Amino acid sequence: MNGSIPTSLGRLTELTKLQLFHNSWKGLLSQNHLQGLAKLRVFSVSSDTTSIFYVTHEWVPPFSLLAIQISNYMLGPKFPTWLRNQKELSSIVLTNVSISDTIPDWFWKLSMQIDILDLSHNQLVGVVPNSSGISFVDLSFNCLEGTIPLWPNVMFLFLNNNLFSGAIPSTIGSVMSSLVVLNLSGNSLNGTIPLSIFKLKVLTGLFLSDNHLSGQIPIHLEDLRALGSVDLSQNNLSGHVPESMCSLSFLYWLSLSGNNLSGELSWLKNCRSLYTLDLGDNKFSGNIPGWLGENLSLLSKLRMRANLFTGDIPQQLCHLSDLHILDLAHNYFTGSIPRCLGNLSGFNHFTSSNTAFPFPFAFPSQLIYIHQMDLVVKGRQFGYTITLELVNVIDLSSNNLSGEIPEEIANLSDLGTLNLSRNQLTGKIPKKIGELRWLETLDLSSNHLSGSIPSTMSSLTSLSHLNLSYNNLSGSIPSTNQFQTFNDPSIYEGNPELCGLPLSTKCSIATNVDAKDKDGKKKVDNKEDEYDEFWFYLSTGVGFIVGFWVVCGTLVLKRSWRRAYFRYLDEVKDRLFAVIAVNVAHFQRTT
Image 1 (cartoon, rainbow, N blue to C red):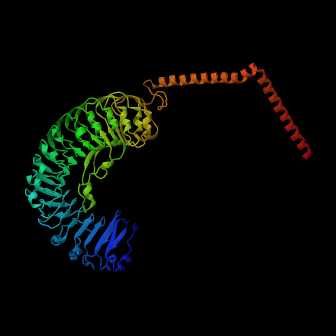
Image 2 (image 1 turned 180 degrees about the vertical axis):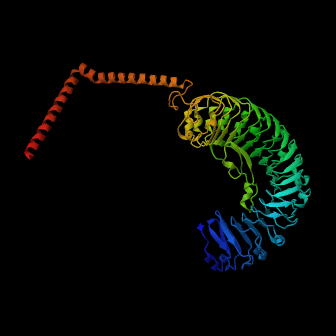
Image 3 (image 1 turned 30 degrees about the horizontal axis):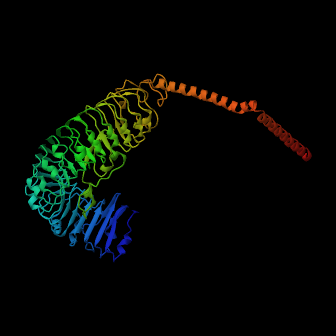
């Protein structure tokens, strides 16, 4: 629904629920819309356009609400004082409403009766008290500061993306023993991960990323029996990952990227329930063991970017049928690209793994969207959250891979990003690469590829980022379809034998790049044309001879057929003369 909300709603004096959420309202919503709703108990409104909720500072609502939900309305900048009169509230959701104030003391006195509090995506400032009876708290994406509060009754605590500092309280596990989800990401926390966290027996999600935590990952993880998601990325953690990490039977998401962790991957052997594994930007070393593709058969996202891995890319990775993100860039892998990667069926359909928490919650939907993975797409790094399941990426760049690009890659019909740059690849660009209908990013730069740019690449209509620089490519650059949009010469630089726009080097002879190029393809095409022309004339001559003698030969050899044929011609001639004579006589009579 769109347009403005009519003030006549205020005449519905018997109304108890007014739910206007998830619409496209415009204009002003004021106290006049609500003034007559004395029996109102539940109120919700949101808009995807710029809208204003205006009430005077002195306004006293005529109703007593149980639940209120306002999102994407300009309610601030002051904290709404009219909530002070709502003595029965159990659920308060005021997200993205432009409040840039401190949370007043009187509000925390109300909190003893509140079960759900969501004030996320505002500009709230100040500190929060150290006691509250709320079970679900979301204060994320604000400017709150101070130390992490200890709230004994809280089950879901989202304090991520604020300015909290200091160490995580050492007693957090004993004081907040009911925690199901703890999200402290995106703050300025320091110190080590307290051992008391491992007393949280019902914890399903632990998110401590983007802080300044140091030290090692604690050893005794096996006590966290319900833990499904662990994100410790972008900290200063060091040492080896404890073997107990994979004793967590529900663990499906593990992100340890952006730390100083080291060692080999033997600890991964029993992580059989993992859907997502992100070990990027660390100091892990050794080979990727072949059993990873067999034991971790549920993997759909594998990111090991920027480590110290060596050896070949194991063929067993091709057993990961749900895999749709494979990022092994910036390592020291050698050997060839496995041809069996073309069998990864996860790149042939948009997957949607069940990455929600393993228990059903009657709480706001952002619970399932807190996962994030950083991927390099179109030459830039992006953080993907909600759309992560729709991203299909193969990135093997900056290794020592050799050999040719396998044609089987073209079987991955829904592949969105293919980055094989900065390797030692040779041979030609596969002609079948034009079958990658959804390919948006193709980077083959800084290799030793030769030959022409296949004309089939003109059919990559989704392609928006291309880099073929610093190879040994030759011939004319295609000029049709998508190639008309690639006007940056740096895409092709470092290929001295390439010619045509957007390069300044003009091709010496105008050629149809879809059929000819400088590396000998022209001669092959000419021979094929001569061959086809020869067979055309030969078949025409043979056909004429056969047709002529099938008809005329029988008339020469068989007298009865010859007489019948000429008798038939005489009858046709006589009938034709008769028709002409009748028509001439008829014409003369009428004139």
